Image 1: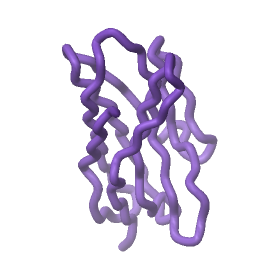
Image 2: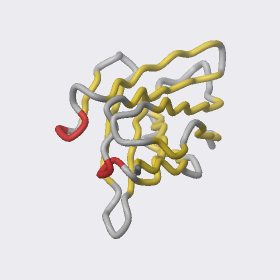
Image 3: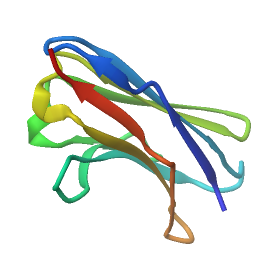
Length: 119
């Protein structure tokens, strides 16, 4: 089981920026896709951005041009960052990091980090 830990959430004013970071302990013998999801109040969890092991990136339409996902692997530590700019109140949600083992097709989730955009 992959352990996933998110950090970097908080309160920010509209138009501000935040950077979320996800750290996962992974096997050096496997390949992993990763992504950030969010769940707003009264809403279903939705994909925000994803990045495959090969580096293919996908964004939700609502965040294109504002959010940037990136990843780095050093030995058995996978880091997945989400740079969020020009934040809007509708970006308010709990953000979750997902790491997927591409061979086992198994998902590991972090505990979530709260992002609140409000003046």
